[in-house]
Structure formats: C-alpha cells, structure tokens
Image (cartoon, rainbow, N blue to C red; front, side, top):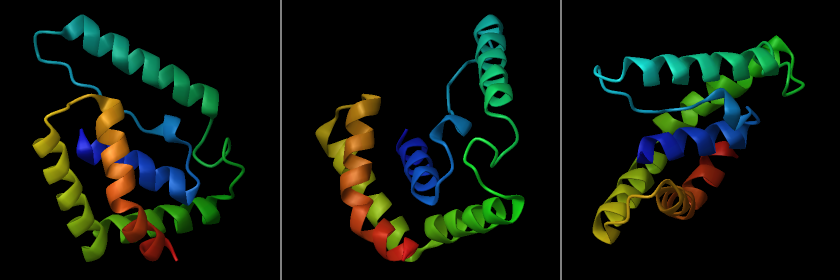
Length: 117
C-alpha cells in the first residue's frame, strides 16, 4: 500500500488526476470482484477521457509530466525517504489507507519538493 500512496502523490504533484490510478486487490477466487473493479475503473476512465483531457494538458505536456514523475520516483533521495516512510508504517502497525497515505506524504514531502524543483 505504500507504493500505492507514493504513486498517487507523485501523479497529483505533476498534475495528473489521481482518479487515473487505482490499485485494488482481488484473488483468483474473486472473479466477480475482479470484473466489478475493472468495469468501475473503465467507466471512470471513459468519463475522464483521454489522458490529459480532464487535466487540460496537451499531449506534449502529458509526456513531459509523466517523464518528470518517472524521474521523481527514480530519484535516490525519494527512494530513501520512501524506505524510511515504509519503516515508519511497519513500526506503527497501522495498516489503514489513510494512515499509510499520511505517513508517506509527511515523510517524503521534502524529497518530493526537491525532486520536482
């Protein structure tokens, strides 16, 4: 779940709507749940339209922003901060999405700001 929080935060920071990314778990025994998740996500992508449309970005701007997002998550500083945040989550032992998002956001804020500058 930590990587999920990091991806959402980075996409948000580069101006890509967070609704364009979702991570849900479904086991092989949960075929109806899998179909429901995919159907719901597909419908939300149809609503948003092509990548960049809902964000008000040209294809070149989308490409630049996604490249920047890749650079950010590849940054050694961000990866170290993410590792420290992951340790903090494990130490706390609180596995809610909200708690993990909060820890990831607070622990990597400085690193993200520097990587995005």
